[in-house]
Length: 318
Image: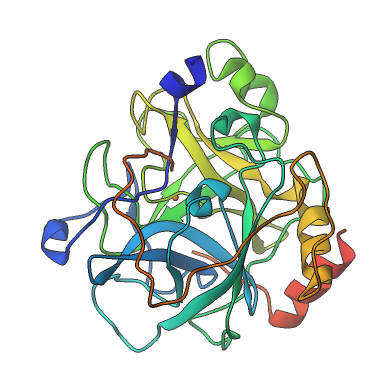
């Protein structure tokens, strides 16, 4: 029960209209990203009441695969993925829209225990993205890599601009330095809630992820290139930008082997693995609309790798 009080998963499942987004918009403590500065960022959207609604972020890791948070997709909805977007409510011709053919959630994910970890899922697109200056593949970190304390990173997303605020119409970014496990797991921070398979970042009481940022990336520059080291997972239910409660991310480098095994299975039947087996969700057709809003609170300037680089890294780091 304590976890239910402390944690707020950052998926946004409510409805939002364009008129809700008037005025100056800012991620909690962040600023508007330069247009198409983070070309691996995607918007995960669901269909309800005759229109599509942003719910989470994600990262394009292959031309037909997206990495996001498990809590974003553990309900049976009609999803789509939009790549190459900046303003969710204005088209500039750079967008690519994809239906979803399959969602694979990590088998150890437990939606009743966000703090248990494994908040990661892969979405297979029904077609391949075209890579260009607006849409690129994310660079994933080497398996097992852990960034040191205070390492500079950025969170990006269309999430709420303040606790209980509104979605942003444009992609926002906020500087969130890493808080290492030793500090983040101390009693004055998150304590035993955080695990070694997570990344903490921020916690200054000013900048943070918020609802609608879930599943999106934590970008960290390594050797001159931005890598996606985190998948936005949760914040404190007391507020998005509570001091000493950094935004918590799934640590991508802890799941490289799992993602590789999913990719290698491709269209073949998934072999049972883990206590719950391989969890595979078949996405409903476009003729089925999603269910109503979910009252949940889960969170969500780059240089992405080429397609070949992304495929090579994914294949080698298993």
